Structures are given as structure tokens and as C-alpha cells.
Length: 259
Image 1 (cartoon, rainbow, N blue to C red):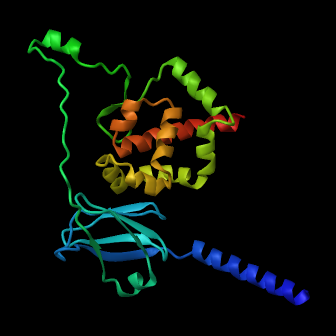
Image 2: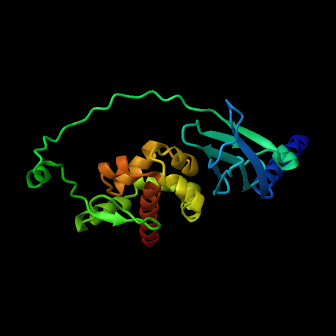
Image 3: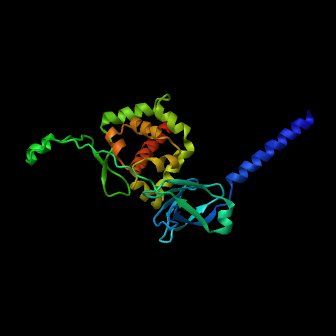
């Protein structure tokens, strides 16, 4: 029995040591080249994000990039017209330094576009009245020179949001509470200009889901519970969505401390 207990504690100690070793992996820099899988030609301006270190960069005209990384980190590569790819950092990438990462082109099929007429007459005063009106106010986002529609921010809406967050059973609390590490990444993501530039050009939420480790439905639930409109949720770019989630989370943290 004693021998069994000693073996058990030895295994636990080794597991804990191995886990600490992985978590404390030394961060260095790796250099690699991104190429077209079909032509072997280097790809310029590919966005590369280290999902673990929350650092971003882009490839130069020779397809090369350098980024902070540790062994077992995950790199997320994104380029217009090519399939996104995730690459696990290995020891060989540090040793040899000539790693090539190939991206595969996407085949696009044109879909039918339905144009919905607004029955315009050509007279401005009449046509303006026939166009749909978006009643939601416009709000600016830090770092951008444009404004966006961010839902109904009337006093009644604020009351609704506060009431929802103060309810322990509310979905918003559940989502934030279950993702503490992911939510802490928000500030790091917002401070990296390369990541911000990438998110500003994307509308598919794929990069956001990888960075925050959330499902698309979770992102929609968060914004719905923060009273953002369906119009904003469906049309905003990924950077606007990121800022909206960050703003909502900051409010949540303040209110959560007061309980």
C-alpha cells in the first residue's frame, strides 16, 4: 500500500512539474516564410497571429515574418482568398529557422444576388421617405475615424443592461464567468495594431472566435444581452465587435465588484 501511495505521489509530482514546464516555456522569436501551396511563390501581407502570446505581424514582400513565440504556441495565418491555417510552434522552428508554411487558395462560387428595389422615383424628397430608417444612435470606436450603430443606448436600455448583469442566472454572467482567461485577452488584442488592422478588414468572426476561444453564437449572445441591435451584430466588422464586447465586459466587471 505504501509503495502504491509513493508511486501515486511521484506521478502527481511529475505531472505538476511537466505542466509548469509547459506554462513557463521561454518566449523567443521564430522566423518563417509563407508560400502559395500551388505555386510555391511567397505571399506578401499575410496576417500572422500568435494566439497564445496575443501578438500579430504580417509577412514582407518575400513572404517572411518574425513573431514572438514559445514551443507549443499556435500561429493563426489569414490571407484574403486563401484558407486560414493554424500551425503549432515546434522546437525545429527555433533550431533551423527556415520553416515554410503553405496556404491553399480557396475556390469561390458566385452566389445569386437578389436586389430589393425601394421603388425610387428620382425625386429626393420622396425617395428619402421611402428608404428604411435606422433609429439607433451612432457611436465612435477608439482608433477608428468612423462611427457605427451600437444599439439602443437610451436610459431605459441602460437599465435593462444593468438589470441583466446583476441577475446571477443571466446568460451574460455565465458567458463571462466561464471565460475569464479569454476575457483578459481583450485588452492585449486591442493594443496590437497588426491584430486591429486584421480585425478591421474582416466580417466573418473567425479570427475573433480563435482569439477569444468563443463560438459565434456566444458572441451574438453577449452582444444581444448588452442590448446591441441585430443590425449592428450582423453588419459590424470584427474590430467593432471586439470593442463592443470589451465595453460590455468592462461594465460587467465594475458592476460585479459592487455586489
